[in-house]
Length: 425
Image (cartoon, rainbow, N blue to C red; front, side, top):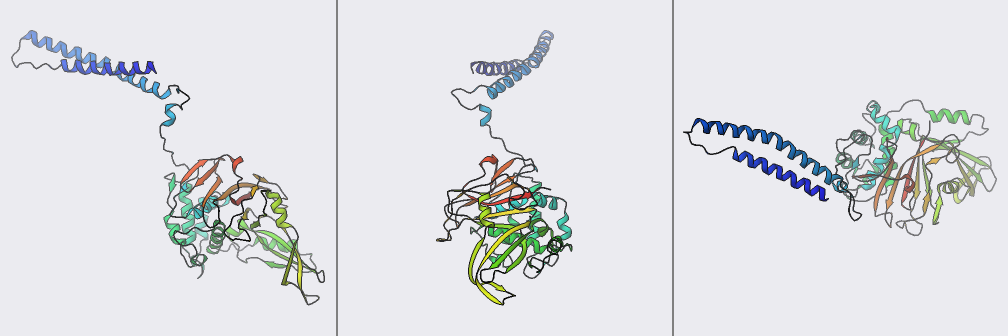
């Protein structure tokens, strides 16, 4: 530190001497002067130029050396190095997530947008421009044809950002209060449930895209159940788009009457797993999935009707299993309690980075790519954030416009609401 002060003082001294020499070089001479005076004046000018030529570079070099010394000087009294206190503005990069500004309680929308933007299939779909060819001009009277284009255009901006954070004004303005989007339930300035918004958005995108014409699920179902003595009941959307191609798997539900023991098999698309969390301090995702698939006893007047016995059964048993896993697996934790729909279940769910084959579906292994968190004591208030795995293979926590790297080992919290898993090829 003392050496630095000496260097700075020497720099200032050099500059002062240079300026002083310059002032000496300009004497106020009379118009009439002798030849000797003229020569003396000429020599003085030459000497001054020579002094400036040498002193100024030396002074500047010493000053620069002093600045560098300050920048790299060792901290005193356990303080951080000085250069760490200099504010550095991060530069936007397509390799790191782009933040989204909060437009008054729109954090639930921002968190969902971030997770969807970091689904590799969606990223490829948008970057390739394929969505432009598959958007319907007239998607139907109950679908707002502006929503899907606004969504895809917003993702394009997020993938090639000019700033570290952008404002999704156009998309937000279209979905808020829109009677063709969830009956206008997402009012301006109001907090809403992120999982509910996710389902509505995915359905809206599905309806806005062209039918690809080759229903892969139909083909799989026909092949899998062609030897069944009794044709299963099938419940799935006849329309097959990019969204259903990415989201849809095949689940089988077997319902057994407790009166006659006859069974009915139902086949339906499985893309979202909504799991009711038990009231435990801590539970693993594997345990939660076992509860999800376990035998369920139902008591209802319309529980079961047997075509053979022509009898209604008020009691029946249901067993669900996934036969074909979706490419994108979405797991939603229902944290509201029975006693109070707004009260929040704060169970800690321990989830892995990898779901091995058989844990979700027998045919696929999954990697975690996104997490939505809800921070708050109740489900109707609080703040939503997202944690995503970016294309640079680092994990980031995103709170609206704020983006920072995070340790994947710290992702599991009592605030986890939604998990996004991508199937391996």
